[in-house]
Length: 294
Image (cartoon, rainbow, N blue to C red; front, side, top):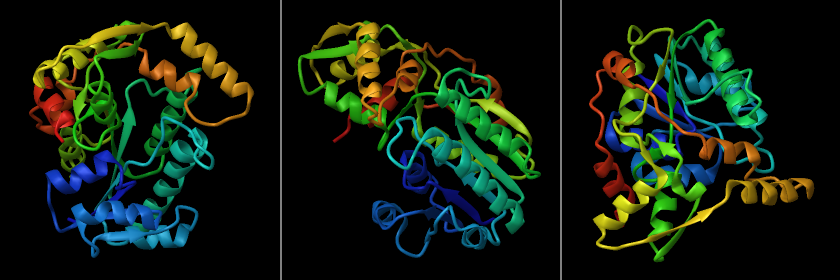
């Protein structure tokens, strides 16, 4: 069964090729830089470079695929990659091209908190992307995920940076509740969901087996490398003030919407997703070890 993965140069895409090596899985990316990033995991023969603005080329890239995994999207905006562009319009183009190419199953990796009516622009854009997938006329599975840990993730890079010093500054004193999920578990989940009859027309919330405070993740990581750290609380209001100043200056980047995402508690029951996808979740300490590994 040929599977196409869009946005494959991100952490989940690369985990798909590392964790479940299958010759029938093909990566679709938009730039030569992305091709170079994927080369160590994929090689040269299983990567297709195509512009999402070119509907015909996109449909041609999907031709012959039984399933498509869509991973593209952003939490932090940048020039040319707003929430509307990267999260909504890209999903619309991919869904249209998949239908045109006769793809039987579309798997979308979304975010916990996605809601098309949300006042948070990030969560709203993710909700709008989900709505596109549900109404595109193709069988689908939507998998909502929280913070991801493991090789290549943003959270892993942040955790390694925090272990470089003895004092760690954390928003809200690290009291935000997280339920991190191993990026390798997401990789397995997406490929399992590619089967036409698996979790068809389902929206599943998948998270790790343990919900802990931000500070505990840092403290566990520090213990694993034999260090002690001191947590320095950073008031959320001061971060909001700084972001408001930057926003007034018209600079793109980290926003109040992203800040809200990172400081909102996550506690969900992944049992339904685990049952329907037949997964065994990676324990938290194993995720942390993989994240801080050199």
